[in-house]
Length: 409
Image 1 (spheres, one colour):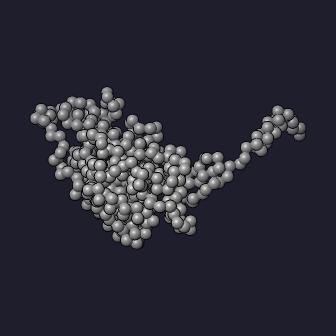
Image 2: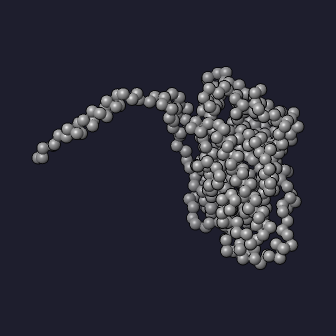
């Protein structure tokens, strides 16, 4: 039997590692909210593993017959991307006929993604019900990227959408322009789905929970911007997070969650209800009466601890002279429509009622098809044959990939 060789170097290395471990204190869990985040004493954190759903550009293998694909947001910070949801209705409604909804998921600014199962399911369902293109943004998350990082990413996405509208307009004016190549000025490439099917004269902002908060601050920031040819027609704030006061009882789990997210999303030491999250704070630099805002739908739930803030925000919009509508789901909790689907009998009626109100709001506020879009000039009309050939070459007419995709439910 071979005699094991003792390695002095290995012994020295092991002793050094033991001494090093003894010198560095083991990190401890500072705060643990199951399903949310785990914060450690060294400042590190862990997010819960989330069930991710891959994008699928095949109508037949996608939920609700809604195709999806992921795109990089040019001009945004690294890691910012979006998932585009295209309903099958695009094929029958024709070119440039679908309103565009820029959507922001919830999660207390700390968790979630467009690929999260509940976010993907909700956006897919709404794209189908509303016959709109839904674009769900993956913005930077706290605590590693505290506010206003999410607001900055949302604004970058809006500017990207404006560039997409500008590229589409350029093609309308001159069908020989190859908008699928990088734009010389913006370095942004036209998205084939948007350039073919999007009606940029009817754009909406939508968000759930923290996403609803993003909608407000994005609309406020865009108030002084020239977004043409993009036209903002409405904003949908679904159970937005506008915390008005600190939790009064640590036993109330919902309020504890609000406080936890609040501390994680804001800069260290920021007081509860900080103006970065609550536009109604007395020290908020934003005066609602001085903003130009599109019509708003504020949705709330009677069992939501954030209900008082939602009501106060709606009332503040009305007092400031803005068009605002309020929808309250009775006996429902915070963002129930994203956590369940219509297969849950207890929630089907409330989900259909809420999402029906959202669809009605979009339909009422969108511009009648073609009213404000740039008319094709006589010269462009005479170029129909050129356009048709270009579309065939670029495969824009039906730019849907047909490869098999994993079936998701």
